[in-house]
Image (cartoon, rainbow, N blue to C red; front, side):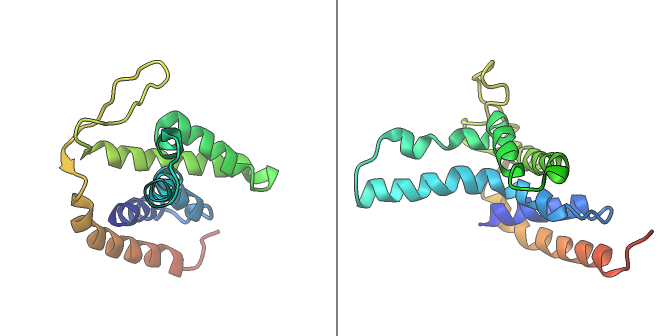
Length: 161
């Protein structure tokens, strides 16, 4: 949960530089990779463990949505739910949020797993591994507070013509 907070708060800080009507879409882009890859995997893993045996692809098949190619496909499909005139801007903001998510995650140590950034051409995992993934627990409150004040400062004042 703290990881979602740090991703969303980072997105708010990035988009609070200027008033952007698509800031919620950018923020959504930062947590869609986790929600769409980890959420089904956790739910189906629980079903596999406690209810009925499922094939491994049911739990592990969602992982590509947390990789760059999967993020692009996910952003494309989500953008199709918007009006045609807004789809390019929505797609760009979703991809921007997803790649901010990826940039933040690359600093975490995932115990050698990393991200397959060049898939399908490169299958080697990559990460900087500068902080542990649990570091988001300590960073989340500070980032959330900073994001709240940044959002409030930008969105409370009247829009500039």
